[in-house]
Image (cartoon, rainbow, N blue to C red):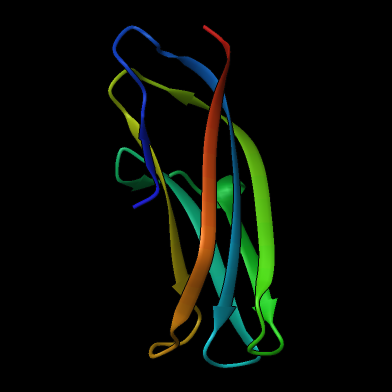
Length: 101
């Protein structure tokens, strides 16, 4: 998966950036890209909703600021508005940058 763990002693404020190239098996459905911290949905501020109007590849990206504790992990998850949709990921990139203690 696309998961990053903060090493011991590195608590602080982080900028999290992500980008994903994807396509959905069905047009006209919403795709949700959500960042989780320690296995928990961080909330709407980390969620990007993309309405797919066709079955071609698309790129979505997002950035946000969050406090991360040492040994916490951050991961990116994808869901759809309709059960049975198949999201194909061509690539996914997740980066975190510490901006203060």
